[in-house]
Amino acid sequence: MSEPQAEHTTIRHLSRRDSLSERIYFELRGKVQRSEVAPEFRFVDVDIATEYGTSRMPAREALLRLANEGYLVGTTRGFMVPRLSLDDIRDVFEVRRLLEPRAAANAAQHLDNQAEQDMSRALQEASLAAERHDANRMILANIAFRQAWLAKVRNRRLADTIGRFVDHAQTVRLKTLQTESTRTVVLNGLKSLHSAFMRHDPISVNDRMVAFMAAAEDAFFSIRQTELEDTADRRSLSQNKREKR
Amino acid sequence: MSEPQAEHTTIRHLSRRDSLSERIYFELRGKVQRSEVAPEFRFVDVDIATEYGTSRMPAREALLRLANEGYLVGTTRGFMVPRLSLDDIRDVFEVRRLLEPRAAANAAQHLDNQAEQDMSRALQEASLAAERHDANRMILANIAFRQAWLAKVRNRRLADTIGRFVDHAQTVRLKTLQTESTRTVVLNGLKSLHSAFMRHDPISVNDRMVAFMAAAEDAFFSIRQTELEDTADRRSLSQNKREKR
DNA sequence: ATTCCTAAAACTGTATACGGATACAATCTC
DNA sequence: GAGATTGTATCCGTATACAGTTTTAGGAAT
Image (cartoon, chains in turn purple, red, orange, yellow):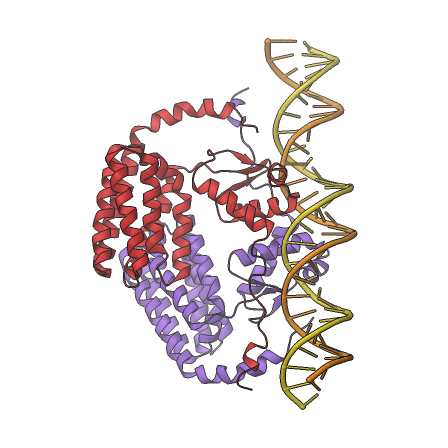
């Protein structure tokens, strides 16, 4: 009997790992993150329940959680993927500008080999994607790059908050990276960041992240500005055809 | 027919206001925010259900939501009010340092009469509380002051994020403001902020908020340092007596 | 007295059922 | 034919019931 007393009030945390709710939650969140569902698509608990072979409850809890975290918005008629307004996107960018430089600087001080390799690989992917004008590949590389350094941020609250905000603007990036010029901007930003990360230079990482975010935001809004009329035109059409599974 | 088409896909959002889950959620959140429940207190859904005269479901959903937002942590044996470690508190302070100055600066540009009155009243309250060495009153004044300007932040995502982080460190402030020196620090900070707000000077508000947060953080950690041994001693005792309703 | 084992209690997670609200459509009125 | 009205399907919120798991407690054996 070495130390039985130490474990006496353990109370195992997080009992509800691998519950059905959790599984459905992560599954659905992934879909939203990867933009596999269009804005204004409606999730209905009973449909999801039958899809996953469960009752309504786990599906419902997953949907409520997603709605609470902002991935979905609750309506009287199901849970909907939100269509972000320009102001929404501006708000998201503002918060990200405040958080990401500091977080990245912090991560730069705690990189291990694994993280460095992941970032280098992501950068290579981004280069290839830019060469081949492959928007989807670019998006994935971009996500991988961020994930790599975000994992090394010590302050988990900070990292999680960033992750959530990024997710909410995810649908945005999908659109912007379709454009050649944006891909160039992003690739240059990643290269610049990468070299600073490799030098483990927090100040430099901070500054370059500031520049990167500003460039990305500019690129987005300049693109968006030009196609504002188009979307307005298409709006009335897309509203009429209702998706139904 | 001016624009009947515009309203055609209205779909009222947020159907589930004033549901039982919501009511219980806000009720419980208030208790946690005001620190009316001690850390490591356990909420059990069935107890809450009977307390509010409902079934388990609404109580359960409220608890899940609170856990998801970090107000509670889920265990195998109910939902527990977390006891924050020093590192946790450091993390919260870091995020707040990043967000609050900018948010306050933004709010300074959009103050209306109502907000100004609220802030002035809160400052008066804080002065009185400091004079009379009333820690609780100081806490409430401090909260009221923040609420006043936070309501005027245009970026709701930013404001909500701050609100949540503040809440999580709430238990902390309850402790720190028990100390005379901290109350002085906070009062001076509020005065300084208040005058900058009244001049609608965003730069000044930003700078003073930076200073304020740094001072508050220093005050907290210097106090906490001195009583670290005490809490460590009491730990073993407090773990044995289990609260039961 | 201490340790080990077994059984009940406590709580969570999931399933099923029902009532109520809302959107949509079809019918009716002017 | 346009607008009001009633009917119906859809979907959410809540209640109740049950199953699975973890903790606690009690008793037997050492």
